[in-house]
Length: 437
Image 1: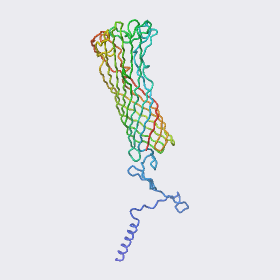
Image 2: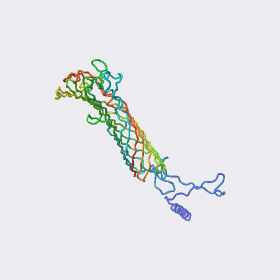
Image 3: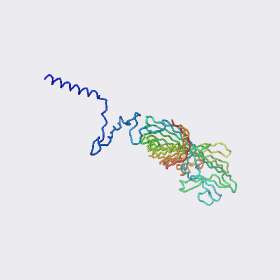
């Protein structure tokens, strides 16, 4: 009995020792695949079955390699193929064209017999889109960077501004026989018909008229804006990258317009009349978009599509001023009313409208140095709702409110005035440099 017990204990200790020799940290021996219908010793070499890759905390550990862990995903390579810079900044020159201001008829020139009436034989009308300029120069700057190891998330901001460029017209004549007739067309509310204010008429009135959006008679037309976006990588490898953009956008369009006429009659009296119309449109909204990049060695192609949704705050400021002079040229009085802008239709108006701003941008780049590239591109921008000065010049005139007609401080007949809006677009080419680290 004692020998039986001692034999059992010896066998148990031997088994424990064998298990301890294997150790908990040892991997089991590789399994082998056996050919169908036979065994490993039937002339078919056994095929080891290696353990597969292990996913740890969203990162892929390559099997049989000591390399770093990389993001797990269909678009990433084992060695972390999301290449590219950690930070970048650059600047570019812009040459853009945008939708012209559409002005009403502001000046007519014609023979003495025409009376300056629009449409009459020989009468030329100044107005429409012909006053606006063709192109605007400007600049755009951008800066950004990724803030995760594998460039999965980042931020980027940009700002652009286009120059304020003047467009104007001027005409002058005297009262001598044979000189041309110069007039300012308007709609006469008292008579209920189209009429013309005489600026220069042979043997009657001589003067000049000047309308401009810049300079001494003031004004400007300027577009600028900025944006800030978060970047979320959707897909990438060593040659391409696709990012989602989520952010905020601001745009501002400022228009200024002044029209001034200086007339003198045969009796020696004179007047200087100035009307001003200013509009401001400011967009603020959220933005979503995508940016795709592809590289061909040192050449690169980038396409960006974005759309912002928000509201446009629009403001219209209109006012007039008339200065009257006596026969001896002495200042008589200054009255806060013009010809087209009088107290009844002047002041500041504001409104707010829903707006959408899509943008498409494409560019081709060439990598000059490891950290420097040059590029050329094209941008198309659309803005669904803005206020322009050309749409908000009020041609409806009550002559009893015009100091130049009544010769003194006029009466006031308040009228319902609203801000007229329209869509807007801008597009153009660019060229610049970008530093990438």
